[in-house]
Image (cartoon, rainbow, N blue to C red; front, top):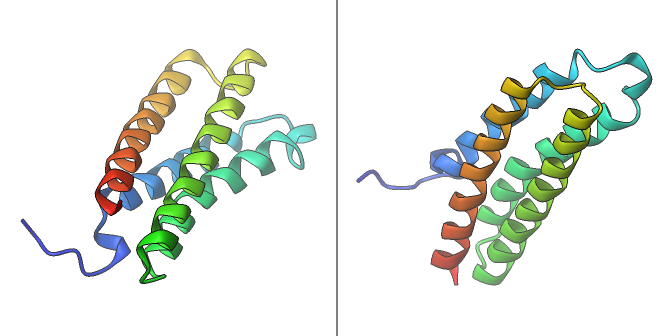
Length: 119
């Protein structure tokens, strides 16, 4: 098993970066009137997830790390809600919706596990 030397070595951070890329790609096709609404909000939530994982890692304090991981979970849940809204508004097709929700679920499980280990 390899040593974790940086937040970049965390698989959950890597998966979160993949999620950000997917959200940016999917929201490119959203209606222009959503540019400052749902598109912007989803992108901000997505970016918040790996950002909080990284910031918490860099704090060198268990309590801070756990708190930032919990913030990442909150951003993930917020993003999942916005994905549901996008799907219901028919901005996302079913295949894209299912694949992105599956990635969110995987990240959620990884974050939960990491939070348990940090405790």
